[in-house]
Length: 155
Image 1 (cartoon, rainbow, N blue to C red):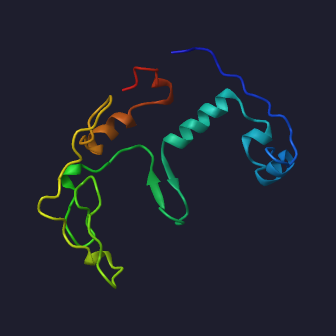
Image 2: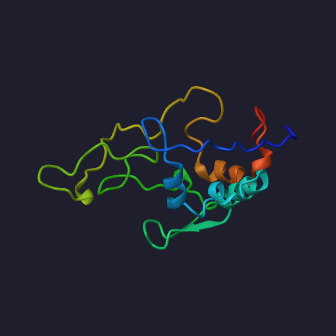
């Protein structure tokens, strides 16, 4: 792993125009940003990275409420209920039907056909296949840290 620190780049102040941002407007819009407050260092970037990947986020009830960022308690794909009535068609895809004419109610979505594939099939490329459950992979992801990402060796 590299041991050197990246230096920060001092942005050139610009005025609004084609292809140019208005630095003064950005600074007045985001006065608490570490970029404009003059507190952005390699250590603050690392601290902000940890803040964004550890713990939980509370959006004040706007959309999700409080949710965890630690990848724990991820679903086991084998436990996903499937069928009609708004349930997914398989643990990997939504139901293939629609509620039908005149209905917008997901409860009216019929069960998938009996020959509907239960798994996503073979995936190509490196890494695990597409059928690995998040309950398996998220536990591994939760144990990683920013400093543990090494090119070609990340678990």
